Image 1 (cartoon, rainbow, N blue to C red):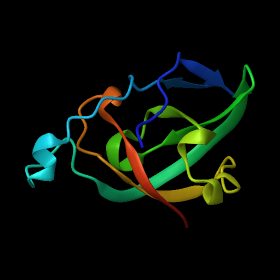
Image 2: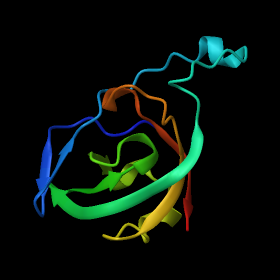
Image 3: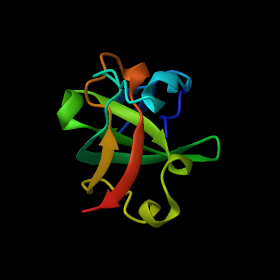
Length: 115
């Protein structure tokens, strides 16, 4: 699932840039030709903050395997229901993320796991 693409978020002194709107270019991937920036890897996702904006619950996450200095804003709706209870500051989860992405706009997340 690709990350929510909304405006820059600031929460508890953290600033998170939003990823861009979702697009799918998986035609070649179905044939097994996966570009390095799209290949998914199981990686750590650290929850930095949780908030609410205009009735939408969101969280700020850091993916150290991609860029440990950037927070990413994601909506609660973008993670499976069984993971939402774990979305608290300081929590560490795992997900399959395309950590070879060159930009925030290219990031997407799948197969979330509670640690």
